[in-house]
Image (tube, rainbow, N blue to C red):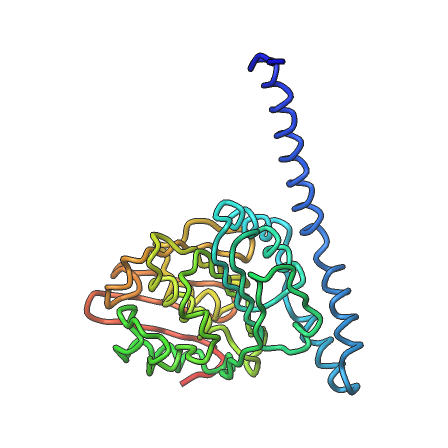
Length: 303
C-alpha cells in the first residue's frame, strides 16, 4: 500500500516540531536552576571531606564559583549543538557542564579541574567523556608580571608550535597528552577559580587555550571565556584572543572564533589601538606596530 508524499508530509513536520520543542524544554530545565545543581554537588562534596577545615574550604570555593546564567549556558550549548559531534575542551568544572557531554553525543569532551573535591563524584556518561585532575600553580596576583614576560619573550608568540616544549611561563606543559594531540572545535575557559589575588588565576588557561586553538588543523576553533567582568579574564582575553575575533557575548561569557592561519603570525592581535576601561582597576592597553605600552592602575601585583 502506497501513501502519497503529500499525505506523509504533515505528520513528518509535526514529529520534527515536537522533537525541537522537547529539546528546547530540556535545555531550559537543565540551565534554569544552576543554584540547585550547585547545592546538590556541594552536599555530596561535604560528605567526602575528611575534616571541618576541608569542608569549610569546599563550601567557600563552591560559593565563590560563578555559574553560567541561563542565557550564558544557552549561548554555549547552542554552539556545541551546532558543532556536534565535536571535540570539546573545558578548563574548569561546574555541575551544569555535565549536560554538555550529553549534548555532544558522539564527540569527545574533556574537563580539566584543579579541585579534587569538585570532581570526586563525577561519573562520565560516555566513554568519550573524561575529567582530569590538573595543577595550575600561579596566583592571580602574578598576572602583570606574566603578561610582561609574554610580551618580551618570542617563545610566547603564536608561531610556537610545540606547546609542551615551550619555555613561555604562561604555557601549560603538564596537561594530559590528549589535550595536545586532539584538534579542538570548542574550548571553554572557566577555571581555575581566580576570585582573589591569592587564588589561582586564569592567565595560563587563557593563553594555552589561544595556542591550542591556533594549532588546530581545522578551519575555526571557538574559545569561550567566562567571568569577563573580572580584570584578568578581560585583560588576557583581549591580549591573546583579540577583539577582532570576538563574535558574540552573553552576560559574562565571551565567544571568540580563532582561525588556524593565525598560528603563523608573530603577533596574537592586529596592530590597531585597543582601549580597555572599567570600574575598579583601569587598563589602557595600546598596541602599536613597533611599540607596546601597558598602563596598569591598582592591579593585584603592582610594579
